[in-house]
Image 1 (cartoon, one colour):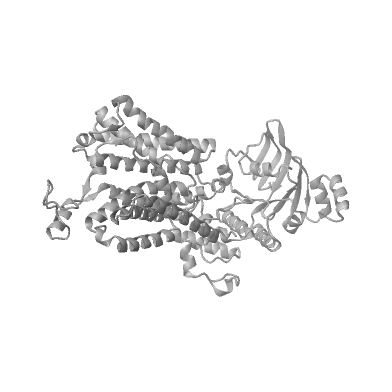
Image 2 (tube, rainbow over the protein chains, first blue to last red):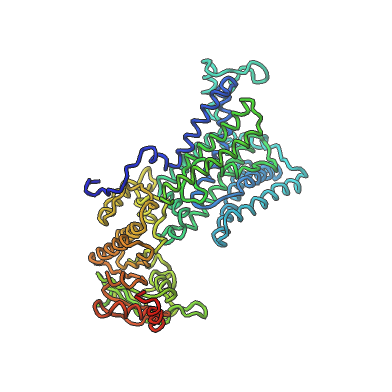
Length: 369
Length: 258
């Protein structure tokens, strides 16, 4: 801009303040602090050995998968409290379809994905049509879906855990998209050159301790890249921000707000379904209590990532880092031998700090007093 | 020549309530037509009828002398009618550039995907803002940091950039300070000179007289007549708006012009 066009009342902004209004900042700082903290506290515990890294990155990836869905939905101005129940429900449906009904596992997975995204769309449709807060509508679904998740297996098999999915999934390529591992030969090579240890005893003697990257991790990275790309680089991303920022103003500008919101509810359900598929394929079973409290963990990761609870502002990268902080701390406390109940204390404190920081940042952006 | 946009005997009923009971109104290119009315006079209903949110119960809308029907806001936008709402013009948390192109994002192709062309959006935003006399730190500055007057100006610039021929301004100055009001009125004057037909809705007589070419008063859902610039005094306009007698009594008890 030319000098003559400068407004004399514009103070120059420090780079720090400029960086502060990026939603990711808090979570970047948090990630650094958490890693420094555990490298002092738990360095000798094996937390940063290949096996340790795989451990906390897998846990973080689980959080990431649902955080991406929750993040985009929150930026679009809505909540989904039914994520945890959806995970339980989706897993149970996959098990019932494949084990009880004897469907091929790929059919079971695809039908479940269809069913769950349809339920997500129903969530969104009810929110749009009634104008009720999504908080209440999805709270209802939290109970409805959890109820069915407990009811169906008891009705059919008289138990609340359905196993035997592993046997059914043998050789099924869609199942391996969720339960498989990638890069096995690479890790054997790493073991051969002595970079990672091999088991010395037991049935897996001679095999590397880390034998591949779980598909779960690739799903997490893929979903984060996809979410970030859509949000920042596409027209649709602009519509997500607009729908959450001020739905009425967005409508007047020609943004299809209802479609955006319903699609985001469907995406949230899709992410829950990915989580469920990975979990069922890993454990080989589905349990009625799976996914409990996951909706809150997803929302916390998103808020730590700098998104505003009121919508219209946030970052997928931030949410992913929020999930990473979550995973590292949860597993790190375990490695450090700290009483695991303290994790909840930490979580509460972190959530409070993040919300306070976000509120402050919001004031800077909007110029509110 | 027929006016650019015209409403003939338009009525709008909501159930048993007659919100508009016969409105006649027209606006031509390069003209600023002020529509004055007190709260409850039917201004909002009239705006929404013009912009296609409501369909009239009876009466006709004409563009260049030809009858048009608007089923939804998108159809009126396609005809070149743009509405700038008082507080719903912009989204404070989003950048000026993202706001400017909201719903009309420029795209570029990348590996077969339609991507939001941020460079182009930023460039156009900075150019258009400079034309309107607003100095931005950058295209990524959040709209929340702009003053109310600047927000109205950005919204007007956006409507003009996207080809508005008829610009409906819903009380653009009612929440603004003196300086900001002057800026918005200057903007209205500028776009009028560019040949755009401006419908300026307000209840402030002085703001109307500052930029208006014609003045129509709306009272209890009816237009009370139209006057040209110079044919009517502020006091007469004020009286028409408020229904005359009552306000005169109020004024004398308050000892001045309201």
